[in-house]
Length: 385
Image 1 (cartoon, rainbow, N blue to C red):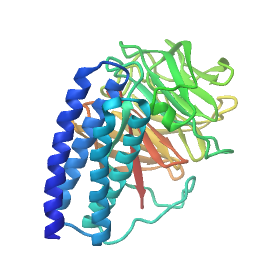
Image 2 (cartoon, helix red, strand yellow):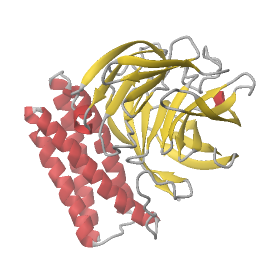
Image 3 (tube, rainbow, N blue to C red):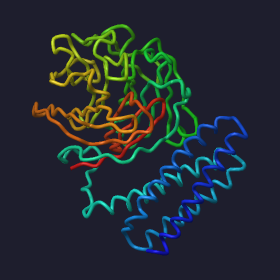
Image 4 (cartoon, rainbow, N blue to C red):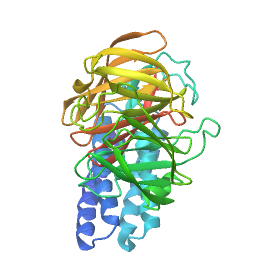
């Protein structure tokens, strides 16, 4: 263990040197790869933090720890080879970082846990609810750049073809109200490399509550109570229907995220909408929607005031709501179970990279949270009870 501790110190220094090197390389050329270098620097800092934590309490076989150090050494070589700055090298190193992060996370968890969390297959609701979330993984800055702090992103959920990989990214215009442009990506690699299947303009959506479900983008129509169903394959509006009694005009939007009066969500059972009404005094209202007709199938009124919540998502018929603790930490603090009508308090902390979370979307296929954090696209893994 002493020998590995020395190696950790050595590789910590190498990571520091690599960070300086990336900064120098970034300053020498301005291109689309500038964003990748910025994210690499953040991720290397994360690895440095994890290694520091592991130093104090190494758990696991020597073979596992040795493999981690070999991976760090390989990462060093890959960054050195970024002299050519071609996209294949960038993608390779990002994959290497993901692999290394996963290994470090496993070792970190082994220092705090004696049992492995139970596994629940994708689409399953046999668990007893959300237990914890992972450290954030920064995917990239949104394709429109850092001024576009508001928006949403995620992975399409297709119940008939759950393994299909389609991603959407929908930054709002800089004023934080208009949804005008979105991009669709066929794979996660394409998303990382700025290779959209297509980019589309709509006129107009409002707020960052859009969601992609089974090849249809659902969003709130600008300055109205109308919900819109948009076919991304044909780039046509399929349906426009009013959401009865919904409070709009930024009346009861989330804390820190204006104009998000109507917030769509997807879970294992289908399409939902989260909003408020005057009759419920600004508290959160949940409605289950028919995804074909946008008819409201059922509605639940909670006692949680929506403007005191920063974001919300649905998971197995349960609403989870978040609030900010400080600029680097968020708490999932409230839940409402639509199957029982019971609501209550929870306390699950989420690290965040920047101040404000503007949207959270859950995907049942990979059981991840897709978070839009001040313009950055971030993912979290979930752990269930």
